[in-house]
Length: 395
Ligand SMILES: Cc1ncc(COP(=O)(O)O)c(C=O)c1O
Image (cartoon, rainbow, N blue to C red; front, side):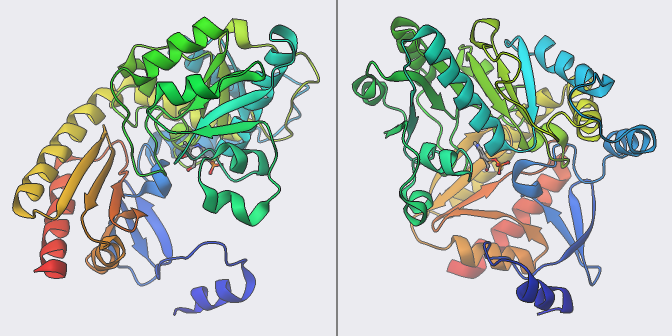
């Protein structure tokens, strides 16, 4: 254990089982540890560093903004906040936006918005249907929304107002709908739940049901949004439009920011209904604006689609070689590889020693979330390391 790791042990709450790596520098798709060892980063801060580490567009935006204005209160207008709102609205199906500091906080706001809508238009309905294996964040209400017992049990009693039903089942949503229901909240592809891609018509059937029942459809695009799955937003691939959408993670390419977006009809907050001291902060909005503008101007979503297809084709070759690879799933650059044995942790540790960062999303499943600007050569390099690691572990 290095000096820094010992100090962390002494001073920091032990809520994460950390890997034995202290990252001190990053550039593009690579990071370096305190001893100067280089790693190829296929985790990118848990699907956050969209433009890779320290991208010049981001560094320039943050540097210039830090020299100009960092924070004011939300009682005043600030230009980066408005520019970011405009670029997100003009490039999505949503009409209004509010910025938060994280994904969980964006989801909290989205649920508040749905409850407000319920009070105004649905006779006070307040319940939100969410799905098992979902992940919506770590605040108390979002732990309730998250359909995984392991996140709920340590904190019981958890807030009421959420019903968790099976993912990828319209029947389960229909059965759970009652007079108390105001919204259905889903990830278009479940990220933390294991990169679970629903049937092609799932979101459309949920949309139809919401329309029939007058419910809001909230899409949590915190992991799938901002080009991660090969379109600017994942909903575009399913021919549906949400009433409310949340973003975070890749939105600021590493600078913490979240967003609640809503259609005009669902945008029912009135002055005083919601707020945040730091939400919409000038510095983070300048960073996110530079990120989103770069992604749109350079068709990064199109590039992600191509790279994702190449990545999956190389994983498919691996599957032909190793028959204990049981599944490859994902879209764009959000991809999982599942095994018929619990080897994810061993694989992760060996890849780490070989200079490749990957993520264990389940004991038998690893997940890849490289920066959106990853090159084909970097994908090849990562796959070569993975191949030799797998053969070393099971060979
Ligand atoms: C789909 C989804 N929603 C919400 C969150 C929570 O975001 P944050 O960790 O920024 O609060 C996450 C984080 O992994 C996520 O993947």
